[in-house]
Image: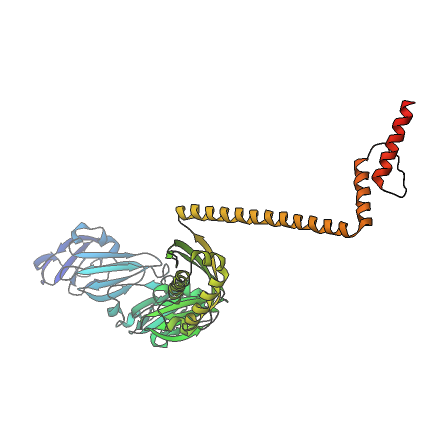
Length: 446
């Protein structure tokens, strides 16, 4: 027994025999067996394909039938995953694990499979459309930040991201999502877990930080204006508003080498002079506001003072008064440095480098000077010796006894080491010695 059925353009007929798909009936009139009270496994299901989603207990059977591949798409969602199904660009279904089917006869179907358990953050190009779907209210936590807003998102107590303006979403099923919102206009960012926040990926693009050591101070500028002066510690600020810059100033005493300059002395000698400078920053606001770069300014001023001090002296004067030159430069430089907050503690000439030919000339001059000094010393010694002899002779002439004693000393020195007989008596010593010699000669003759 047969009967006639009509399939409309938006319909499809699924003819089952013994539970298996026997034929797919397209639009038109078809003759099928009359199935009055027959086995439900033998039937014809007429389905409206304008309803994109198709539900049936025969999906696994239908999936393997190639005749439906042009009419239907199947979405297999494994355990622990889900899927968003878009029909003609609109969200049609939020699917859980299982096999699902959608007609593609009159519609474009796209399925986005997601895995909530793998990543907490959910990113999708159509995120704005998802916020309007109530079915996602239990699945997603939406974070919508306006311009000038920032947010810290914590997932199960751990910082996941630092977010800027825009729409963001997080899977919240099975998780604890905490959102901390801030305004860029607040500028200063303070948090009890500051180090962890700054170490978070992407935080450096939204938060500026500065570390100030105990011997340092930091001058913080926002939009070119000095906002505050920072002591030791770690500080952070939101980016995105007016430009932020930080100048660190070292408060310790510092040493600067002023490299050699070719300078001409008052007597037209060109030489190179190196200067060593010790200083300390004492007024931070003056140092950063009065001049563009206080370190470069100090360096330049030291060069100018050095040139002025050397140019006003001859080479001889410069070599003999190096300490005086350093003191003069220090006094003059200290006044200028005080205008931009720097205290000059010491200045010294470290190296004076002469040209090669000038070194030779200078060495010859020094040798000549030393030889003249040596000659002068010798003449002084000779004069002193002659003067001493004159004084001795005068003294002996005025004291006969002293003269006799000197004669005895001389005689003793002459007869040292010989066998001698001394006869002491009155009279002239010369006569006595002559008499003794004559007596000795007479005795030898007899």
